[in-house]
Image 1 (cartoon, rainbow, N blue to C red):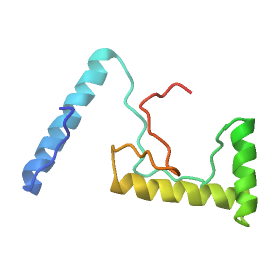
Image 2: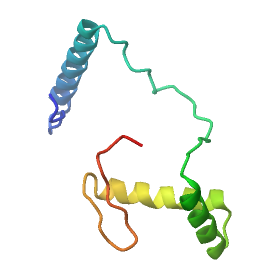
Image 3: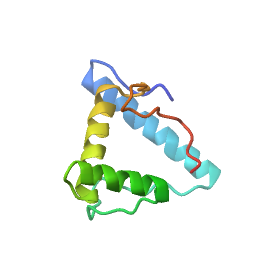
Length: 108
């Protein structure tokens, strides 16, 4: 189940996907856990707060000035570039001079 659902036959893939979802719902119910909140029709404000620490805040601010951009515009551009790279290299780690190594750690 963790390998994902994929294939060339759209009908078969859809049926397998539905089966997988049903199995996960059963697991949540057996464990007494609530299902994750739906995101399909959620509207996003376009704003979120990220705590980055003083040093990174300073570095990003200086870089934004060097590029003649506001801090907000500079960070948006960084996120867009990173998102595009992620789409091309999903799951791969980048070790170039400008890139940052991805880690699986979620403890911040």
